[in-house]
Image (tube, rainbow, N blue to C red):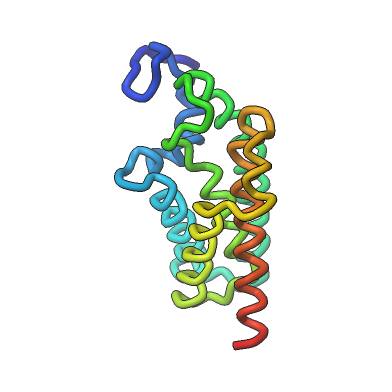
Length: 168
């Protein structure tokens, strides 16, 4: 399904579902720092599932894994389409990659704000600094490169946060 309009793209037509998924339903349109907004939206959804819906930790983990899988399945093609239609390699408004990476960072996270904030800060740190080999993953083609550098940043954040929980 395509529609007319060019607010975020050079191409006058854009694929509605791809832009909805790629921007995580509009979070990527927020300024400043759309990536941070995407990460915060991911943490907020995790918090709603944990506190408002009262999911126990095992069910929350299963929901998080399902969310990551679905976001990968739909996010990679959505990021590819949004990048192509905007004429940019890795458009800032595409934040589904931050959502996936943030959810990875939240895996095994105790259900409290201090741990969620730690996961958020660590993920953003690794997403922005892109330590080896995270930056190299950006070379993957199209949506794969857009998404998998954030998957790696999420894994770094998960690892450091998990080690921190062991020692503190």
